[in-house]
Length: 253
Image (cartoon, rainbow, N blue to C red; front, side, top):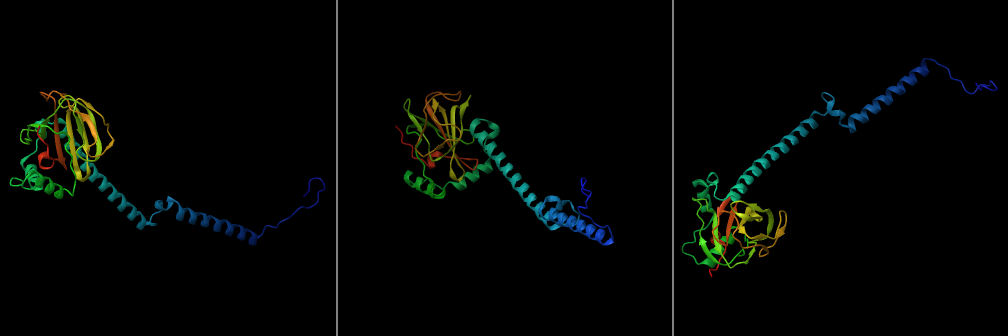
């Protein structure tokens, strides 16, 4: 009723029919809202027996994802061990065993009766056409000796000679080491890694992309494991050391 005129505004009658319609409407709206919540929200995963197939599929995907993560972690751990071995150099605990050495020999073709240019061509074919560039031309003072922990070659060069990247790649280490001085390590395609030690200065930082032949440092005599200006150069593939002379023609001066 209107409070001022006391006239009737509207009226309704409460009976069983009206109550039934009201309750039915509430029930229908409630179940509609529940259906929408269950269909379009994660609540359905909390209802026993509903969406078991989806839950199982989701769990299977999670298990596969976890398995992939575990595999990646193991691979990364092995990679880190290999990288530490490369950086430490003469660490006897990181020396390559006979089984690994046999695997190296299988990857590198027999080059005893071939000329140097033939060796380079065959090596490139065996490693998917990778093109190597001489990091420094000079006199080789020491060859690779895997058993003694000398995983590369020592190249003597002229003072202030530039050190070049053997191949395109990404710098994964560029820092000072007590034993190897200014050291730079480059990750190349196909699991190849090149290492350059004892530099007087470095021109690249971690994360830098370099092209083959690009200057990355200057020859030096830094670190405790050196007795004169030279470049200690190493080549690695999948954590195994390779003889750089089987891939790169280093001209003696």
